[in-house]
Image (tube, rainbow, N blue to C red):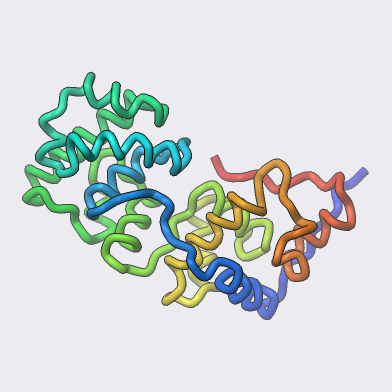
Length: 230
């Protein structure tokens, strides 16, 4: 049997979905705990394939020991690995955090650079991480595409779901620039709480009257889900 084709939303539908997301999550904000731009940068690096809740538990200990690039660079690789072990991928993350901290000390006077290009040049910092930092630490509108943003925007039809870079560009076109950062957090919260990867709660979703994926699922529960980006 052929899979049911999901219709594309109209421009008006997309506008209404964006407005509804802002209405559903008026207090959407980062769930990572941080007190400085450097702490945010470290926390985001640790959050790869790890929950924010677990990262917050780890950083409470880590930042009590080293909350600046100067202090972090003094830690041994082994001691940092042991502290961040619960976050997973601790070998790679520890190396990246130490190398990133040393680069900040050597090239930026211990400060976190404020441009996307400079951030992406740091060890272990990709586009998603850089976007999170410039938007939440420096107030630059940006849309960081993680697995939740990718999945939810594809299901809503706000993006085609081809890849993360394409998704970012497509979202920037349909979302007002002044709301990019807020909507990034709205999509994340919606993905965590409602539009989950395996069992989306389409029946109770506040967007089910607009979302083409939700409409299709409610009509046909056997519909194969749109997968998230890896």
